[in-house]
Length: 137
Image 1 (cartoon, rainbow, N blue to C red):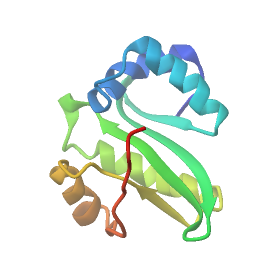
Image 2 (image 1 turned 135 degrees about the vertical axis):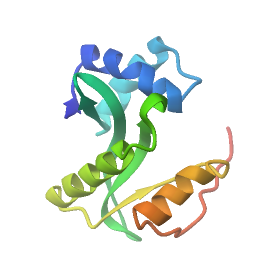
Image 3 (image 1 turned 180 degrees about the vertical axis):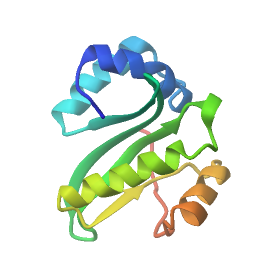
């Protein structure tokens, strides 16, 4: 389900903080408002009323990839990892992307996240296509 409002975002914050531990709730909410203005969408997978996984995405278009879904954030609650929720969340995003006429789903994963890389490549069939480079300003 998509999380549309501040009440939903607050409910999701403890899970998002597991991925983005630098966030405070105030910063998270302020950034959610700004990111939503730029097309960011936050989806949750719930089990018995509790959020167990989140995916934050945006649709974009570029010459290299055409129209695509970019996954900014993908996290499963640390208490229920390796139970298939991340896979279900990503499969949902793939189907949703097809419905939005996207040609592919893409994401970036930190170099240190080797278990995540194994998940993307071996369980989900994603291919490494590039490195992401950045400079702090």
